Amino acid sequence: MPTLALSMIVRDEEGTLPACLESVKDLVDEIVIADTGSQDGTQEVARRFGARCVSIPWEDHFARARNRALEAIRCDWVLSMDADEQLDENAKRALPCLLKASAIDGYYVTIYDYLLSSDANVWDNPAKTNRSEFAPARRFPAYIEHRNIRLFRRSPEIYFVGGIHESVGPRIVELGGVLGKADFAIHHFGLISDAPTQARKRQLYRRLLHKKIQEMPQDVQAHLECGRAELHVFHDAEEALKCFAAACQLRPRMAAAWLYQGLALRCLSRPREALEALRRAESISGRSADIAEGEGDAYYDLEDFDAACRCYERALACRQPWPAVESKLGLAEVRLGRTLAGLERLRQAVREEPWRGEIHDRLIQACCWLNLVEEAASAADHELESVSPDPEAFLRAASIHARLEQRDKAALILRVGLSLFPGAERLQRSCLELADSKSGG
Image 1 (cartoon, rainbow, N blue to C red):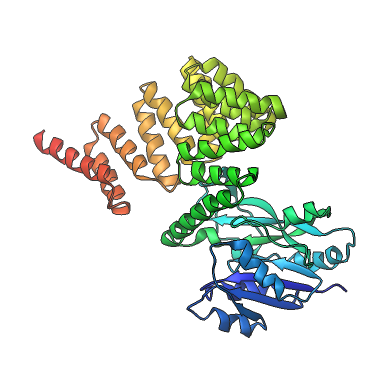
Image 2: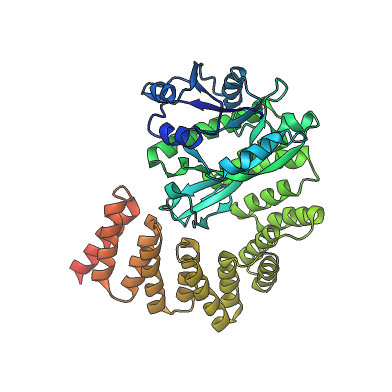
């Protein structure tokens, strides 16, 4: 029977490491952990599970660190994991057959990234409702799903590439190897850490993504990864556009590069240029749901609501159900004068996915535009109850109630918002302005 090793890099992971190692301890023949400078009890935890620990310097480069761990492995196969992950229970049944497949050099493994809110996107991936049977994951409302090569043959020629979003995939492909799909999953809990930890990670990843471009300037994927982070995580569309333009220049026939360039241009309020980029993407790959949605957004910005409706309908023909785009179509229909159909579509989208703030926002916008102020107020209240609201949601709800002369309700909403976001200057100003108007009245 081929042997299997668990390979990890860690730093200050004594809190999450026990659950990770517990999930794999009966399935692997050895555990090798490269520690990049832990100051807590990480290494003691690792040794308790029989792991060999290797202390290595952190060089701002994930691939180098992971490759240092690979150097110490003696087994036939490698399973690569992080300390905030746990192996699915199906792995016990699946691994023996996977390791015996002589024609396969590496496997894509499905990874579930759990989230604290259903109203969240990671990169450009919308959250899915969590119905996991995996006990440690049941309490989380949502997840996103992706795949990565986490199980691969141990060979000196197979090693990680890339300072961040590192993978052995490029090496396996370069060597002419064969990739398969594993029928088990890895459960990732790193996205549920506290806000300061998440902020530190994001800044580290941002720095490493730009460093990866400097190290690999001809790597299209490096430009795309960096651009997607700038666009979806840091909301810097100007910086994102630079990355996507470079990707388009490096590989002019890559539809994804033109798609993302179009999305960035739209965020920069350049809808006509966005349409040109999106049409270029469509000319390469044909129609797709994402391209059609992007075109619909650009036409909406140009106030060509008829064309926007047609694009959203094309998107929905490619992908169903899709409440977020249903709500976009509903708002465009309202602007086009199809009031009853548009409003019902917007209300239905809220009923289907009440945890998505953007869907509530469109219904509120339509009601305000139609002067349906009472329904707008009800929709704004529903948003505050259903999602993890930001300061703007509290401001919007308070403003609508103030229009209805419900100043006490507006004041209460602002106070609740301030209790959650004490540093929000606009909430503070609105509270003072409302108090002054009440006293003046």
